[in-house]
Image 1 (cartoon, one colour):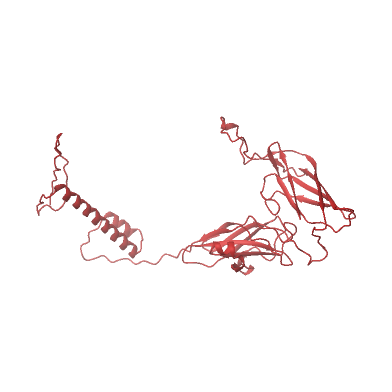
Image 2 (spheres, rainbow, N blue to C red):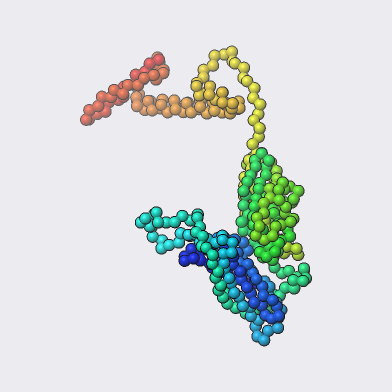
Length: 361
């Protein structure tokens, strides 16, 4: 297996959406192979839309060569459908610009116009250690599907307890062809999917409301499935991972892990009106607002208790403070409620007089 890369740029900017084809000339009498190089972040291509087009080459042949067999490579790039564009990546010297208006925006590409470029890719020289595949034998398949690298959650329905996931389909042999099965699994523990994928719950078509896991799309196409998950009385996080399986059971590596949290909201409980008390009730505006807010009785009780405890702590703090200030001064039994405080404090350079506190009942 060999990976062929082609880096396509206009100046220092990568060129995207071009058609890039590698032609591999194989030893005689075998025919040449045309291989489309892609910039989609799948399989051989590491990063999407970076101007580097890539593909696996696996069509080696069992040929009789005088020395080592040679495979000549030629790469052609063009803009046959008018979609090619160059995109500024922001690369520079690292210094802060003096005029920010000269910095182009990254989100818009610039059409490059019609072009046709051809370059030599050199020569692949192989010996007897290369893997030859008899494509006429369906069981002669040593190559697994590529790893799915872009699994993500795009929608979550709390009411229906469903999760919608999407990814780019991979192939039967790396990113070539069509896989046979999409093995999608989930767990509520991240570590289980990361280290024990085979032990996690496997999802089937029976619990899908959209999509198909047993009939994957060809490599490069977008897959979408919607999964029904069990309700839970508390917030619970689901973790998902997927791998592709080919016709002879070769499995790709599990994908990156996607996650979502579904919180089951229980319906509001029916509340009954509390009959008015026949005893005098001392209340506050805050308490009236709580009663009219529709809170449950136990919630109101906790709020009232917390308010009372808070007021008691504040009152105790004030009492301790004034006891410290007054020292051993006695307060009349008739002085109970602090209603007004006078801050008339007489001071001189050598002494600070005690505060004069006036208490009324």
